[in-house]
Image (cartoon, rainbow, N blue to C red; front, side, top):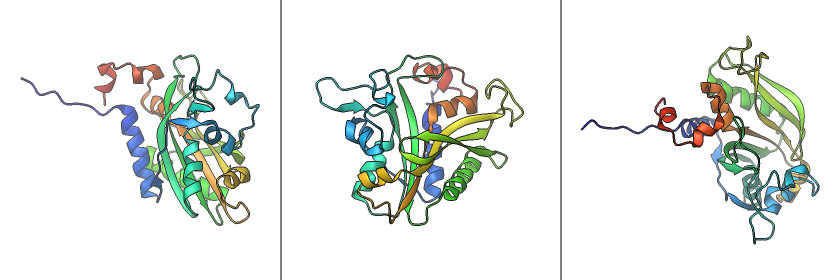
Length: 242
């Protein structure tokens, strides 16, 4: 009988590669619960009570368990880690997250994120930029380009969206990057003082930067996969390509 060999799923392969790169850059892996309290998922991350992310269309609330949700991002792990450890901190947080939304080619109710956090003295936006440039070059090669655009997230100030030059067309323009030459891959910024304070860290002594990426869409762009739902279809024709 012919021997059948298994294949590593492209999401798992990419998650492992991302974690390996960041550990080589001096980051420690931190993990946390997927069932989370409202405090860690929203309050401690400076998300206001009236923020749209708290609405039922975005969050899975656990029935019968007060103020408990399926985590909508991996950022709660950062707060939990800061509560138990003194700076300097340098962690990477991989894991599954959940959003209550309609599924289509680019949206799923379950997907994967990897977030990073650095806290210490003399932590700057330049440090964030240098860290991510090193990461992208290791992941995609030395020819990759990165840019940062101003944006808003409740847990960082200032905040930025981070784009990289398209992996498929090298920035010349194609369907994947919508002819722009750039692909948005993550958000980041300087950790908001309120988040440091809520985690038991004095923002007058320490600063930090944080970033987070959606792994599913990154894998879609890298390998030209057009529908995110294929990752969860159990169709071996997809997995066997890797």
